[in-house]
Image (cartoon, rainbow, N blue to C red; front, side, top):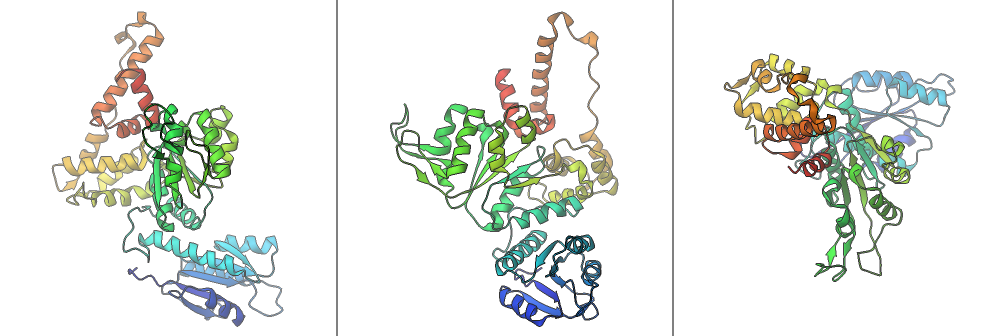
Amino acid sequence: MSSTFNPVLLVIDDDHLIHDSLSLLLPDHWDILSANSLAQAPQDGVIHAIFVDMHLTPNSKVAEGPGIIAAMRERFPLAEIYGMSGDLTIELMEKALAAGARKFLAKPLHPDEVTASFEKIEALWALRSSESRHRSTQTHQWIGQSKAAEKIRFEIANLAGETSPILIEGETGTGKEVIAQILNQQDNRPLIAVNLGAIPENLFESEFFGHVRGAFTGADQMKVGLAEAANGGDLFLDEIEALPLAQQAKLLRFLESGEVRKVGAKDTVHVKVRVIAASNQSLQQMVKEQKFREDLLFRLTSHRLQLPPLRERTDDIEILAKHFLKMPRSAGLKMLAPEAITRLKAHGWPGNVRELKRVIEHLSQTAPLPIIRAEDVDRLLGGASAPAGLGDFPLEQGLTSLVESFEKQVLLKALDRTGKDVDQAAELLQISRSNFYKKMKDYGI
């Protein structure tokens, strides 16, 4: 797609007033085609969206719409297809969805709903093409062609223009921060990002809400908090599962009121932000374990995105690996042999996409040939050595002491293997960064 994006809408409806109404609602850069029947519809070409009426024959009790939707899905597999009808029976609408429609619009069409639909369709195509008509390039991309990747891409586009909180859940390394950046990017808003796991509990209020001069020892000047700094934009709260219960209550009050009171201040300031939170743990499970407030979870989940682990989207491993090979750190100097791709697909990827990225960067720098071979991958991803036998442990030290000693050695080994990169070490051990930092502190590392 060129830098000037001109989407095409196909309207299949025997009512010319519907065509005229949609023409008036379409943004200027869209083009519109019309057809009265399946026979008049285009056979090929580029169609970005298709609106199909359910009843094209006057006085007919048979709805032709589902059959037309199925035919259009076959001709234009990437098109966003919407069903339309004044007949709002559940059976008919479910038939439209089963045939391949993404959504169903009730007639008479509501202008706001139609306009929002065009915006979301355009956002989806912008994500697919990795560019927006408002920008020549996008900094962040959601890479993949699998059904799981396309599902996430649609969900992202469907959140275009939304202002209520969004929760992104997924294992470490699945791309939660990338998704937050894309959500922010498609709405062209300011962004403030913070890792809650890295903020000491006693500093949360000052960091999040700010403080006035003299509020406490060392507060020699006023500080604007993260919430106020994000006014008019997005506030990305990474690792929200690391937030202590006492601080969760303060965050909840902010989400409910939109008010910020600096530490030491009497007055409040009202701010308008969209909160995007991310967690690598199941917050629902944490609620059951009484580690996370249920009312806060309700506030955060106006919209929810669940990112699949890489092992559930192995069809994307090849395209992701080739994408990472083109990035600056990899310099695009090497190619992947088919056998190497097979090896990559067979790996479990506990660190998910982030781990794959690090592996490809490493292979691009260390593989001796211009083509990365299966043996290069095996050398890097080969199975860990077998654990020591029980006879190697001083059992008289007791289980607790042995476990602590072993855990410390595991942390040190992970840091050594990743060049003391805590993020990569946490990925390798499949724990959160905040948990890794806590263990480092516990063991004096």
